[in-house]
Amino acid sequence: MIEAVVAVGIVILLVTGLLVATTSTLKFGRMSKDRTTALQYAKEGLEIVRVIKDNGWDNIPSDSTATRCLLEGEQEFTTGSCQISTTSPFSRTIDFTDDGDCTVANDCRKVTVTVSWMDSVTRTVTLSTYLTNWRSTL
Image (cartoon, rainbow, N blue to C red; front, side, top):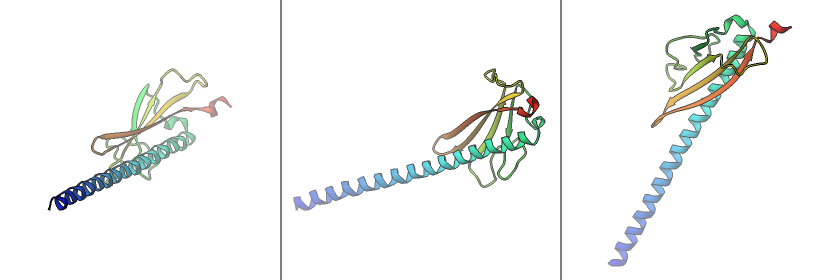
């Protein structure tokens, strides 16, 4: 009888361990997938900003600091809700700043794309680059 109780106890411990390991693996897999998706949205945001800039430097906000949104499938800045789409948990903001670190050109803006989403906590991915009006120097 004692052997059966000990065996059942060991089986319960093993099953509990397997359940915890499986749950953790699924959670980290989902977090990794969400982070990869957010990184793709951030890279896409930088590329869209470059396209907008290449269509005309005047399309880039000239305020010393400005925040805009880029919705999914759009190539124009918006304001208001920055949720990428109505069905997406991700939101993408584009921050334009004059941070003084850009010394390569007169017309220069720092662009920071931040993609955030809600998991058990708010998570973010941020990418930054500098844009210059290189055509004005030609």
